[in-house]
Length: 347
Image (tube, helix red, strand yellow):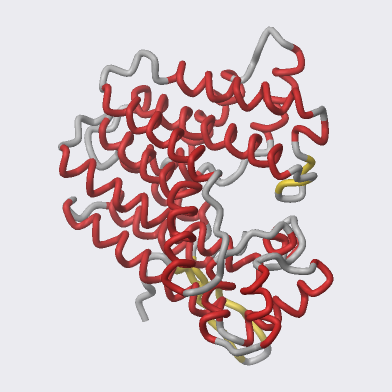
């Protein structure tokens, strides 16, 4: 049987039998097949170079933050989008570096605002050093991102990132404050994650095709692809807070709940269920930390996580549809496979 392109098979030998298991391709497998691992390695090296500073504190905290790595999914989107046209790594590397610097700066500032002690199992900058260092490092990374684009001849790319940064800051001040009625809660939630996550995915895709001289129609289509992919990415992140493995995630289950962050699985669970604990939460919009395990169980029993997953799947299918403007190619297939990775990721 032919496997879908985003799946690989594992053959397991036992006594007198052979079992073939299908499993979604990992991000590394997707990138290996797309032949951009070397380019991403170069991006990683350049990120470390860019964060060197005459200030010992900035250099130490910057290299610590960059060395933490991450999926570099936003840089990947820049490079893959650029490969839909006439690919030039030197040209595409600048928006790829800039988007990772912007993303990292936003995380540092988010952790500072939230007073988070850890991110993905790693001590945050303000906890390892202090709040002043975290604030200055975040500002420094924003400045480095701007400098990365200073010589970019296409003014559209600078606008993409400036607009994204502005939207991200505005979104940070637009929390989800209620769980019902459903239409208002959904409106607040999608505004929040659109500004928090999707806008930078969108900018990455737009800038990637723009460096190849992409047409306005191509830029718009890839922007929509990136935006929908980013929405789905954040929804999966929010689902994992209810169903993920604490060791894999590097944070306890229900961490968003404890911080008072209201997300899609919870919104759908309140809409689907008459469970008292959920409707009590809907009235207060602030869970008692002691009751978080009960709330998680109630959300899963009400199918809040499953409803959110269906929403993410619909967004990924819509994202893929935006790629139809481009002729079939290995790169277009890889972008589609990234959608499947987003849906199946465990962290």
